[in-house]
Length: 151
Image 1 (cartoon, rainbow, N blue to C red):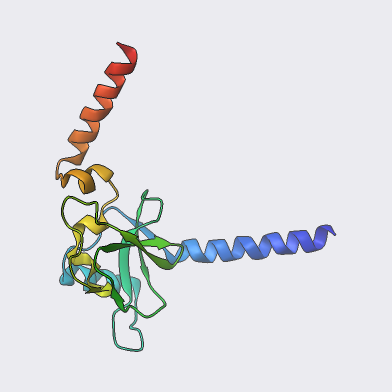
Image 2: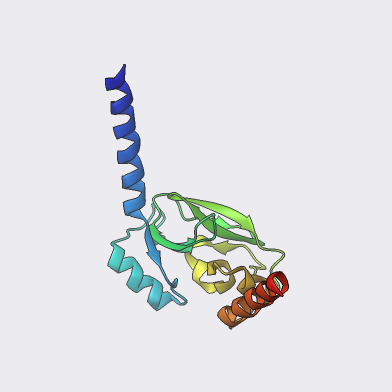
């Protein structure tokens, strides 16, 4: 009974490890075609059967990290009003219609996600406020909350 359980655990661990090794955590996603092509070359990404480059850089579904990887599926087109998130090595659409700015207003090729910086941010203040000074806002909000609790 213990041997099958150990074998199953090893299979699960190997599959998790393979999935994690395929994803790279990054501080910033490419913001133009040149940067995207450079990142794609660095990772050795290929093309799907229609010739679309399979490099992708998006936040994970938990909005805790930016991840880049070579997407193994067809790149295709994303519906307007949606950003993409990574869940393992899958791409999951997420509505961005509540964003103050930056939500795609037209359908777009998934290969062109770099054209939508609001879709490639992990700081909710950036999305809600369209802010470029998100760290300053975070510190300000944290300070106000701290003062309200302890004063």
